[in-house]
Length: 156
Image 1 (spheres, rainbow, N blue to C red):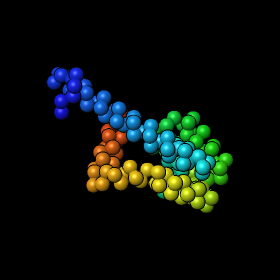
Image 2: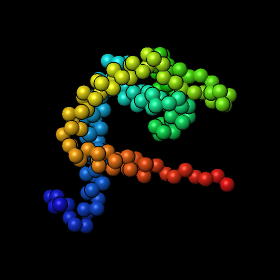
Image 3: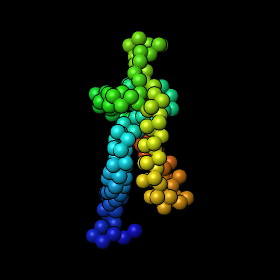
C-alpha cells in the first residue's frame, strides 16, 4: 500500500502507527458508548468485565487482577464498588485462610445480564458489520493480547 509521504524505508514504521491509531479510535468510540450504557446499571467497563469473569466461577482478587492485568490496589477499588452494589461477595477461601474468594450474587447476576444486553445492543451493529471477518479479528486480538504479556518466570 502506498501512503502519501511514506517512503518504502518507513513502511515498517507506518504499520504500527496505523494499528495503534485504529485501535485507539475503536477503543475510544466503543468504550465511551459502552460506559454510557453501563452507567445506567451502576457499572463501568472495568467493573462489568470483572463481574463477567466472576460469572464464570468463583475466583480470588489476586487471580482476577492478574487475568485483567490491573494492579491489586485498582482491583480492590473495582471489587469494593461491586461489593457495595451487592453484585459480589468476598469470603474467606475454605482452602486457604489467607485468600478471599469472589462469588457473584443473584442480584449481581441479574445486574450483569441487564448490562450485557445494553452493551450488546450498542456494540453489535459495529461487530455485525464485519461479517465473516469478526471471528478472525477477535482471534487475532486475543493472540496479540496473549503475546503482549511476558511469559511467567519460573522460580528455581
